[in-house]
Every structure is written in C-alpha cells, then in structure tokens.
Amino acid sequence: MKVDRAAIYEAAKKLSNWGRWGADDQIGTLNNVSPEDVINAGKLIKKGKVFALGLSLKEPIQSGLFGGRWNPIHTMLATGTDAAAGNQDIPSPYLRYADDAINMPCQASTQWDALCHIFLDDKMYNGYDAKLVDARGAKKLGIEHTRDKMAGRGVLLDVARFKGVESLDDGYAITNADLDACAKQQGVEIRKGDFVIVRTGHQERCLKKKDWSGYAGGDAPGMAFETCYWIREKDIAAICTDTWGCEVRPNETNEANQPWHWVVIPAIGISMGEIFYLKELAEDCAQDKVYEFFFTAPPMHLPGAAGSPINPQAIK
Image (tube, helix red, strand yellow):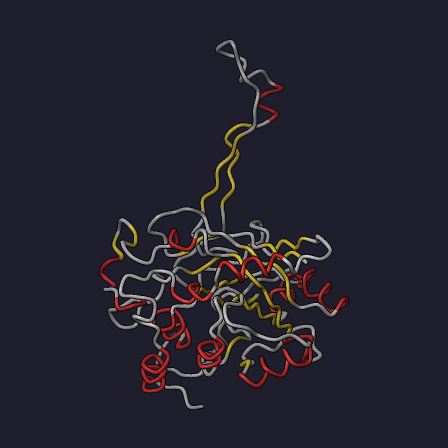
C-alpha cells in the first residue's frame, strides 16, 4: 500500500480505539486480556522451562542516532575490595557490603513503550492532550497503569526462520501475508489478547558480529505499515520484536518518521515491546514445534514514565 501522510491519518481514523473501553481508559489493547485468558495461558506451561527475553544491559546498542539516548551506566558504590581493605569497618559496628547504581534512559534496552510515548499531532491515545506529559512526567497514560497487566498467552512468530534466513535484510518490510503465512506454517493461531512477538534475527546478527552500529535508529527489518490493520483485526494485546523500533527502516515514506508508530500507539493503543532477546526461545520453539507459552513482562512501577526497562519471561 502507498504510505504517506494521508494514509497515516486514514489508518488512525479507521483503526482508532478511542472510547472503546471508556473515556478514562489508560491501558488500551491490554483490555483484551481477560482473567480467564491469564488462567489459560498458565496452562500452557508443560516443561517449566523459562526463557529470559531481556538483552544484557552491558550491550552498547545506543549510538546516539535517536533522542540522545545513551547506554546504561553501571556504577559500583561499594565493593569487596573496599571491604577487604577495611574501608567499611569504621565506625563500629560495621557492615561489609557491595552496592551499586544504574543510570539509563527508560528506552535504552529491552523495554515497553508507554501509551504516552507517541503523539498523533497534539493528542495521545484515547484523545488525551499531549500537554499532559510535561517535565514532571505523564499525568495520563504513564507506564504505571500497565504494571499488573503484562501477563497472558505469548506467541512467537519466527519470521526469519520462516523465510529460511538467519536474519531478514535491513529494509525488509514484514507484511500481513508474512505474518499469516508464518503462523500457519508454525501451526499456531493468533487470538484476541495475545502478546505477539516477532523475530527478525536483526539483533542476533549484531550480537554475532559484535557490531551495534546503526541498530538503534538505523536501517532494519521490521513491520510494514499495513500491519497496523493486522494488529487491529487480530485484537492482540501487544506487539514485540527483536529490533530497536519494531517497524521497518528506512520507513516507507519520507513524509513522517516512524509512520507505523503514529497509528499503533496513539490510535490503536497497543503496548509495544522492543529490543527483545529471542535466540534461545526461538531455538526451543523450532525444536519442539510449540510456539505458544505463558508470557509475563511487568514494567517498573515508575509513575508518569513514557517507557520502562524489562526482562520479559516466556515459560513453556
């Protein structure tokens, strides 16, 4: 489909979930997950095998291409060498210990985007005014509203393996047909309220080469703009990928930066997960042919935040 500003606004109007769950709604498509869905997702655990889907915070993925983000800075405040040197022994009674701190943007590594993260002109999801996000944080749609909602049925769509490649090429746009054909080949059904995780292989390519240049903000495989219609039709709870920004880069238009984001977050109200580490999960799914699992990824309880670091868990 042709992607331009007109297509963006048309999709935003057609696919909007504003008011669907009430004028005060602040969690968007996570409303699609019922308590029964969570119970049934728990029944998918057969082996008790847990996969951590968070990328190491030591990976230097940020290179300054977008938003002034920097890589996490881990600082030791107290160490075993301090203790062994007796530096912690005064005053008495004393305690020998290690302590540390971390400094990072909320979107620096594996993370959720909050619904206040992207604006459509001067509006956020559900019609909230963009000015409700100020220097003190978001007064609406902050990440804290999803802190007890990120659990349910997870489904991996391993598009790279489906296409027979280790990694999709940069600039490859994953289409609706790709998603449906991949699900069909894997023998898995996409259902209302699912947490859908799409593997492109892009992150693994960077890990293998030990080269992150361009990963955060550069060219990448990802979701085609048309998949915003797929997301709305399937009524999923969340969409996640192993890439920096989920959608294909270069973008399919020069009339907007990240045009897919313009629709899926502020219009549809989808929770979006980025920079997911999927290697071990994908290998296990390919081995046992089971692509569904219990999924959980609670954000930090940080009121007013536009995103949150996470270490998602897939349990089979």
